[in-house]
Length: 162
Length: 162
DNA sequence: GTGACTAACTCTCAAATTGGTAGTATTGTT
DNA sequence: AACAATACTACCAATTTGAGAGTTAGTCAC
Image 1 (cartoon, rainbow over the protein chains, first blue to last red):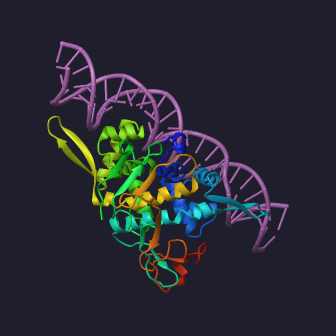
Image 2: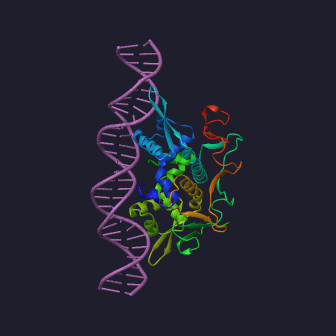
């Protein structure tokens, strides 16, 4: 899709998706979090066509989620490392994974364990302010141009309440 | 990308992405959470070509994230409602939004408030078991075919530690 | 110093998908 | 009868993807 106009969308979800709103980018980020750094590691892990991998890595690098670093001068070799912004993507990965485990969880699945306790990680999203789980309380969406008290520009998510 | 083989991928992230691994699907789900239900509401909100919207809505319905419901017999009219699985997508949306706010947050942004307290929601992902924030402790990834004690088939995320 | 090998690509081209616009079907409204 | 609303379908040009072969630049084994 057209990622030009979406970049200045007032919705932070839309803005993010302009950068990683496709399957390959997210899988590359997943693999990067799993420790992969090199072109051929990604290519083999994903079974992606090299031309597409080149483009995706370049895009993610441009956008500041990955960083290209030369790890050998002779021969000249590059690797792709997660930037802080790329590392901040981990919670997104976990929530996507949680959804998949819950709703597409048949058969053998990769598991994510806490390395210290050895327990399986169950990722949940909470509101840091109220401590409530996301989705358990009603939410008010406020558009950027509306006064906060002006109901006419607000929408409510009615589907979830405590 | 090819969504056939990814459906049985052992990684829950990959499985999820087979269903909503594209920008339009995620934005449709976002709008559905914001209360939109009808074809033309989605079309106008997203500026999406109708043929593509038709296909995406059908896919999301097929996959069980949306449900098509006839809300009028005369004239025959349909609307698309979130299923429980679709509603469970909300934490993913929030984490994507959090990322965008943090890393692409310039200018006017839509805000999400707790309807009761009126405070801005700051979504964070935590491990329900340990209570630790995702990304603050080392993680062990266990492949489905490996013995849990067999190090040879395990990978560690080394990038993040407490 | 020749041949095999590795890493990180680029090139090519057919196939699939997308975007943009116009048009259709069914019904209600004036 | 004309017009509007809703939920689409049809069409076609433009873009993107997928699959595979080829390229470049070096290392290593003998």
